[in-house]
Image (cartoon, rainbow, N blue to C red; front, side):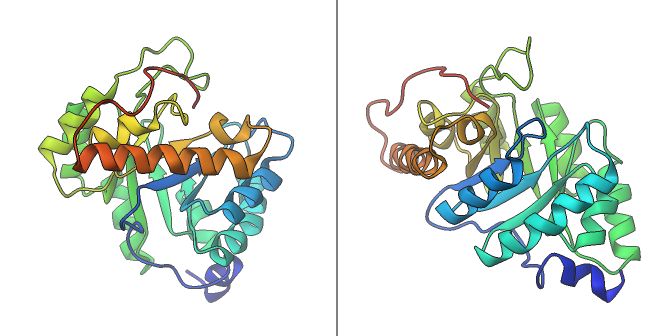
Length: 245
């Protein structure tokens, strides 16, 4: 990749998900939101760990434009920038990784292209079942994004798999980084962490909030509660099935 590509995003990539003592919080952008960039900026200032740029209805040119804005902001606040689906945009801006799903190039092909370009990107796989996860892991996924956990406005008509899917994946791969997505909010995020997720990804829980900072803080508290429940089992720490994204 040309040298200027990495500079667009504002610095060198950092390998691996930033796993640590606290669960990860990822914001997935909402292409329909009129303040997409401003909400992302506020969320980064509030301390999210990952920012996933998603825009299935946006052109490559628009995604590139957004990535050149959001990349430096993510670096400034110590967060990773992940581009959904579009390897070309990720390489062009020097993003940290690509989130791959059913509509994407096969993971093994993406890995091969990255190696050809001499780039080391985080490759996340979106999975909806144990069978899909098996295929993703066999293909070399660096982490799994599992969902839809609870009913979600971004996937209308889909029933949530519930925390059971997360427990299945964690039992199968105890050390593989695992994020949960789908209908997650401050009311139910603890359940995802208690079931084995290393973090959550949300859209409307932040994009639909009156205060981004307060939403991030509430999610952080829920994640901490889930972590305590996971390592110090006790009574349930969150209400059941409160849908968001």
